[in-house]
Length: 471
Ligand code: FAD
Ligand code: NAD
Image (cartoon, rainbow, N blue to C red; front, side, top):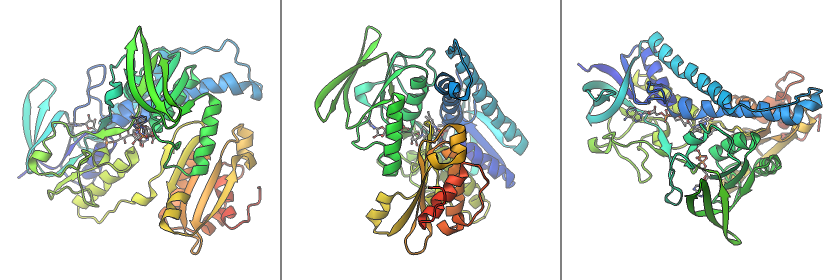
């Protein structure tokens, strides 16, 4: 008999959620995670809670409050004289938020009777895992099923190797102890834009170098154009078609050379963030050695139910690629746990919401016009500007719009794209509607409270049929 019904390797949002769901379903479950925080203590939650989603949003919120007080409070009649920032206090608050949430997972594990082990796991056979504990001792565990959820790490580029002092990855950029006067960022993706926004709001002159010619190439073109214009206004200098060829540190400064359409360019910055994507984390996992297929980009290969080539061994989250998002990994964890328990759960990959937490936020679900054109699908679009929303105006944030795309013949919702205040929350309505295979008419006939930002979603739905009331 095995030691456990399920061994979960990795305690990030994919692994810890899978472990809890397995235990809820009555399976004897262990979760092995190796994360050690700067205080030398184990810290569950993986990248997301320790150095990803949560600390970045804590700093985004703090820096947003600062910008509000600096630039917008006076419009509301609120005077904020002698405004100053205490970066140490801001970072201490961020650390408290992280601590509360990472410790919370330990509490959830206890409540659900998940055994938690701090250590590094290695697959040493079919259904057998060796764990190297923090003190170097080893133990071997057997499980009827294994779920690999080892996540990802920041991708590196040889032309700008990180030194954790001047050239840093996202983890370093979340921990700056002062505001860099000049900040360079390689990559205008989610991390580049979010961390660029944080430090720009706090006073850095930010230059972002993006290799691709289009800004946010996967995002709806109208939304991307609006966002690019707004971020430029906020002070982000975003250079497109910019390929970095070298970065070197001299006299406490980083010289970055890049090529763009007009030739070779150079910028000198105090810190450089490398934010060019993330790569799967399978180092020393022993996966390939036991016969698990790993593709050319390093991701573990799985079927549509996240099972690897070995029956009973599954992989979920960033380590299998696709959308490298916390909520995608968590849902895969739930699906796998339920399938191990004999249920027929499925993942809805077509309705995964995406959010980029700039101000205002960018959020979308489903297909863009460009994708639909490429697929030859006929569609109609409704679009409503936040400038015509009473609630957005009362709030003082009228930037952006909601764009809703529906099938031209059936009216079924195909995509919703938002740039605007609270887009991260508003997108949930679109996700539910698409999950239920709603038409735009369904949303148009749904009563939305007044005055709310959600009325902008309602109006965009009316707009699909050319019958908006307020625009
Ligand atoms: P991870 O969170 O990477 O967790 C993997 C865990 O496995 C880690 O604890 C690791 O130490 C452990 N591990 C690895 N190998 C072993 C081993 N051999 N033995 C034991 N343990 C092991 N996503 C969003 O959806 N929204 C956001 O707002 C967002 N913001 C982000 C901001 C930043 C700055 C970054 C870097 C990422 C952000 N992401 C965001 C992405 C998100 O963090 C990841 O998609 C998510 O953490 C992936 O979850 P995971 O469980 O697959 O892997
Ligand atoms: P990303 O893939 O979102 O963006 C990387 C950007 O860097 C791309 O635009 C790419 O074209 C560019 N790039 C790549 N190589 C380059 C080079 N040599 N020179 C210049 N530009 C280059 O990756 P990221 O921003 O590093 O984020 C990593 C992962 O974390 C992503 O998968 C993302 O989904 C996730 N994440 C999500 C959120 C969120 O959901 N809000 C926030 C942060 C991170």
